[in-house]
Length: 300
View: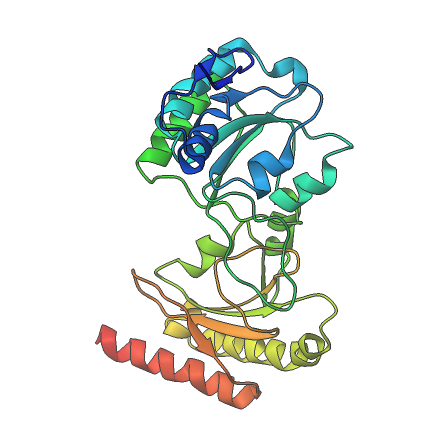
């Protein structure tokens, strides 16, 4: 009698008991071909988890000597709960995986990264399409894993957007911004989704001549907005933020067909961006002025 078995390291052997058809066997292999929590020994199989897989992935980034039984036991209930959509694997940041880590947004050897629909490696340049939803945990312990997945189930986790700029450098960049607020992936959503702010963002990219040409006009718009807010500090001019984001270094949530590209988020609770296809200083400033006047009327 023919039989089909999968011997899984540290987990029970699985025996195929379904119909002997290609589709049934393939589905079964996809189900049992992944251990609940894959322990990394010498190498990580990126294709299995990041490219050819139809599953999302949870990467637990730890040095080899910290992939403990206790941490695996904390992870296994969640690996079992989400096994139809997420596959769990330990992963290590090292000299051999630096490029992959940069593409995924992995910063160190003590974090967990959840990618809902598999890997979306690398940042875009002149165009941009939103990638898979990602969530990140810094400081992986038994307790933090439990809280992380409780927050994930209850949709309390902030979306993680990868950046080539470190968090401290991003905070410094933001603090040193003058008329134009310099955004990164770390603060992009916090700024544009603030209900008390109306936000204009220009998306730029590296090696973009048009972006460089537009820099001076855009900064003039920002200067005019600042001047208007200074002259009328109690007006809604004070709520307008003029910002910039380099999408060749920072992931974000918007579809961009080419750089430079402007989007505007009006004030309000349910914020949605609007494309601003203007280029002259006067026309952009008039566009913002119209929104200030419209908001003023709404508050009367």
